[in-house]
Length: 196
Image 1 (spheres, rainbow, N blue to C red):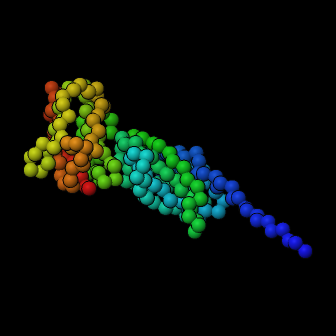
Image 2: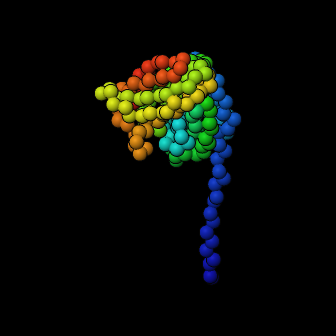
Image 3: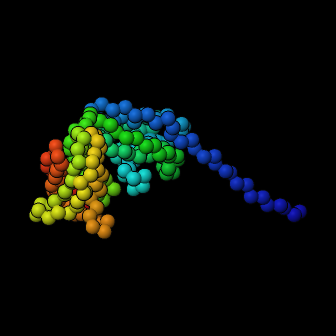
């Protein structure tokens, strides 16, 4: 007798993503808490980014965990976090959340953070702590001017972002840099360490 052959395909429904991510900060520590919606994960991987791309793994947690403490976050920077549920088969589900870590800084003139890795799209904020019109100059250890932000007015708490870019958008090399902030009221110098 003739036989008909049928192919049956089982379509696996998408796994639910981690959701409802919340943040709480204590000093320089940032706690992430999410809702675990996956029933067969073996753990979670936590990734962090400064640009929404180039996510870097910063930690892992065991299964049925819904919290992680980021001890390396820097205040006053916006991060994107990716919470990934995984098992031996790979990635089950993930989602991306954004958060600006506002630590205890206030309107204080300074460079935050004072150590950045430009290969990972990190950047620093040069914060102006009071109303002033300032010029920002950045020098390498040999005294060469590598970056100039022309004089302009800032409100207290205003800032200038620098990601290590110099002429032509090229990233500067690893080393120690001196940031000079000069204005009518402010005349300060700060060191910044860059890794590339």
